[in-house]
Image 1 (spheres, protein in one colour):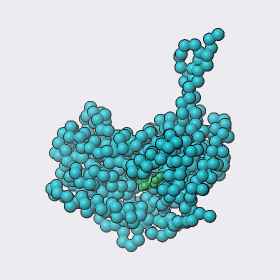
Image 2 (cartoon, protein in one colour; image 1 turned 90 degrees about the vertical axis):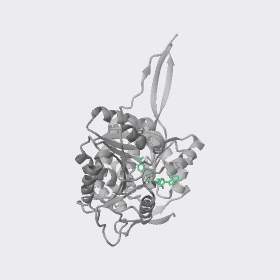
Image 3 (tube, rainbow, N blue to C red; image 1 turned 60 degrees about the vertical axis):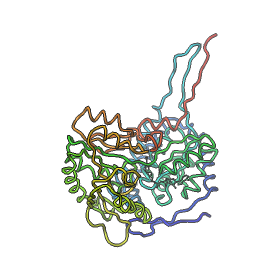
Image 4 (cartoon, protein in one colour; image 1 turned 30 degrees about the horizontal axis):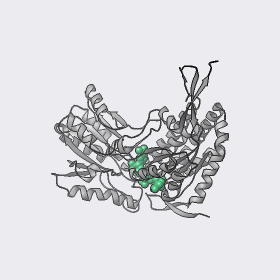
Length: 462
Ligand code: NAD
């Protein structure tokens, strides 16, 4: 029997479930089941595998509200965001169901025969999931893994396992064979490390912090596992004076405070061209005041609590240290009061002007604090945007089309948007540069990292 741990609702501090803390033995058993299920899953005819995945997607749609409520109760995110994320899960499964028979090999012109390539499945995939988008990020790995004929063992974050567990149940209900999709709850230091080291796990698809990603990569090296890493970020939104400032300011809270800033793509730095700073800050203050904080089950609420009390403490620490540093006047706008009573609340906070050397301007905060930093010209904007070991996301706000393209090429990040803060779409690739990781999820690009290219040459000469 495994031990159990409490799962807590961060908005109420109530225990909402007990979940097993599995150990190495249970992890090995799941990997063995996944390994055994592989050959039959791989042999399912493409049209049938696609049909099963579409049935899985439809089953998720049938349980849309249940999954959304569960995600909100476990993570504290506003119910509207949870509904969108669960809808995305179904869309991901439909998208990759459609890709099952479209990830084709090639025939290659060569001398002396016929040469062809096959995209072979890897085998058992270990998926390690963070707590901020539990069900959505699980689907980003499950969709391409299953479509390409792999089986998968998912390890959700200790504190937010509920929707992943439910998703695997729904997969079985939809007709996925036993062992094809499993979830093993437990600690990263036990279940996660075992998956990273297990000789029968062919690939680790990891999303989480850069620090843990580094550890996963080094453990995976023992068996030369394939690894994809989706890690942290310190993304910048760059606002030029010629931009539509109203639009940039109105959209800014969504770019930095969605999911209470607990978002790898959060634009936790806004770089503003000096001449536009005062007007932009006035507009931003209005936008931030309308970003309401409270009960995440209320559809009108924009922001819920931090995921745990400990994490709230980490986020609050950025204010102490950042504000204490030298660097000129600091204005902090908040969106007003956060609720009294239980819940791990922290207000949306804008710090302006912030010094690029402050910790809040350099490290991933993973909470609702944004550092607004002035710049003079395009060169300085590029230098500041790239002055980070991360390279995940970012935005460029300008009415000058040529400049938007120059900036988009110069900023070192895997996902950029122009006059928008949107980072993630099912159809387009998502992933980081530099220490934000490597490999791409979503889009057709994800299929490559769940398959191995095999080349076969057939001699035809007599
Ligand atoms: P985390 O790195 O602490 O944990 C992520 C997962 O790894 C959890 O399931 C955890 O249990 C597991 N884990 C912990 N130690 C492990 C180990 N030694 N070996 C194997 N697994 C281990 O991250 P978190 O706090 O859950 O999530 C926040 C981080 O995730 C942030 O840095 C954020 O930027 C990042 N993130 C990145 C993306 C992206 O797509 N780039 C998306 C979401 C979150």
